[in-house]
Length: 458
Image (cartoon, rainbow, N blue to C red):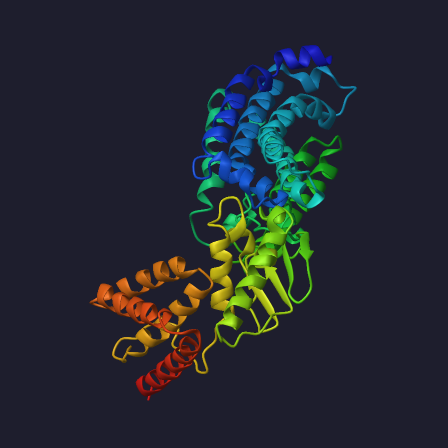
């Protein structure tokens, strides 16, 4: 059968308006329901992350449609007796020609949203970014084989739509049930890479081998051979498929929710200056503001020093977006700050950069509780927060600091407004003092806060 005749008769073509319409609808509705276009293109932009997000809604649909159409085509082969009419061609070849349009439809369901997302974000596809797409394309082939085999065994009028529904809910529901390994072998990766991350090979090989082994065990039923050879080959491939599926399930059983094997640190950075050397993610959304970010950091540290605060200039200030999901803790010489989030197009701006400098540079000579514990005195809070609010005023970052503490007080104290008013009043009074006295007040406030917290923890 020539290509034109095959396209004219295949179910993949005459159902195309339906599945193309669904792809377009889901792309422009579901993918932008939570993240408007302006936020998407504003960054951070990382190709593996964007591709994985664009495929999230389409994996189940692609597999379901592929399986349903393959059931229909397999049933048509059985009804028409095609294999009996073409003894000169192997069954595998006949099946491949028949399923080619079905597979192409499944590939388009996955490829269209990926292409539209990359065009939308102006990102170049990389091998790491296209890896989840290749996984989906491989599994489309596997589901086509499974569907074709099912079409030879069942009435297609019933099994074609039923199989599509079953496969769809099978893929979707595995992401909602226990055990966790089910979602990792389903073919719709439960793990979405963060910025700078990409899938390790095992994350994609496990779901591919799990489904592909089942499809391969069905495909051998079409091999031309004697019955004795067929029985041995079918038994061997069936046992092999079970072994492979068990091994895949075992490998995925150690993975947590959304925590398949991922490698981080692959995003390119853009850096400037020395002491401190400031680096941001190249496509994080703040690359064009790198010089401004560094100037703001240096100016804020200089203002604190001039005010008498003992701060140490770090050697490097890096964007914690470069770390992926496992953030690194800052040290005295190396700071990790959310620079792209702060200075990016969707961020609050330079005031957030100054706020980050404040929290990273101003240190007390003692340690404080990370949370307010019931039953212990919190008298130290007023002096501690007044000192920090004074320092925040020095670098013009008092607004975000007050907003943060207001939220903290509201969930802890019975009189949060009174506590905040007292903190703000102490800081205002300090700002009215001569410069030298302000410095002395700051260190005295620090010392008093430390004395009070030590008394509270005895």
